[in-house]
Length: 215
Ligand SMILES: [Zn+2]
Image (tube, rainbow, N blue to C red; front, top):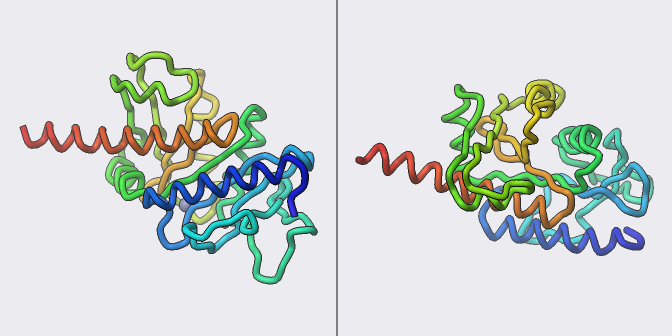
């Protein structure tokens, strides 16, 4: 059981997950979500593996430490943390200011990341909704979204992402080729807004490319 403020974070995160499910961004029990615990130092609330996100509830969140180990109070037979837990813990380690990491498997984040993988990035520019990303106060910017190769070995993904994490202009998320989108934020609502912003902009990007092709 979560204690204190973590109970509210668990409810807020579960609500965001069900919202993603209604958007069709969480097929076949996939995707994973976490937020930093405010009650247990160095721990995170994270979605457990294999849950149908349309039925996701606070009981489907578990507490893990920085190594991805499940807190003794949450260990149950068959309960596992996501295979991608290492992406979450590594992002929290690198960015002390972020408190939430979210993931989506939309059709567009899966297919665009696959077809654009050879370019290693997508550059979004000129659209008003870019202001949905923290720190962007104009549409007149270029937002770089890295695309790293997919791997079942998480350290490979983080190694390929590393140069982008060190860049002067901070990124708000990244794509894994043929897989999906990760984004983060200072709290659950800002991370949720970042996923929504990217998913909307990917639709715009895809639609504009198609329209240009048809011209
Ligand atoms: Zn995934």
